[in-house]
Image (tube, rainbow, N blue to C red; front, side, top):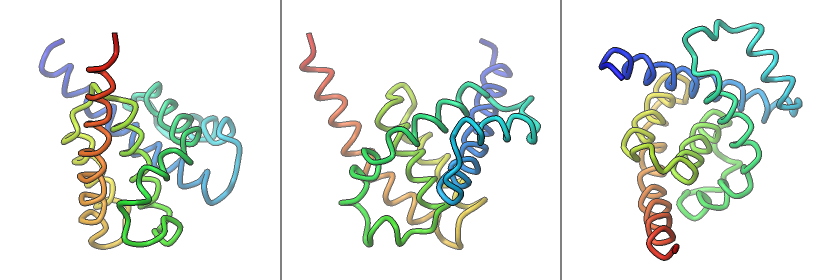
Length: 153
């Protein structure tokens, strides 16, 4: 893949995260079916520059693993998860999902993307909180993944 192709793919993934954040926010607040939210976003948003497959993965997999992701994050938070804003919860869940289920993605990229989402959509200074939580989580999750891989046949 050429350098411009890699950049385009990276930007499409960034847009997928941004769109997934908005969809997960809507899912949490509205309790709509994921399929309905996905269809609504595909119809109403300009998805030409979005990695649609990754958007779909994030939307469905983050929602599908929400209890597991929340449990991984809970010990790292300074307050109950439900006391965080819904935008910050969604950002942290996306980052937690990527750290746990997308080991090919560098942890620094995942954290940087979370920080950028928090700067764009979160409360003032929430990017610092997101940074701290995802940094601690990356140390835990990626070590567990490495240990599991080293013990597998």
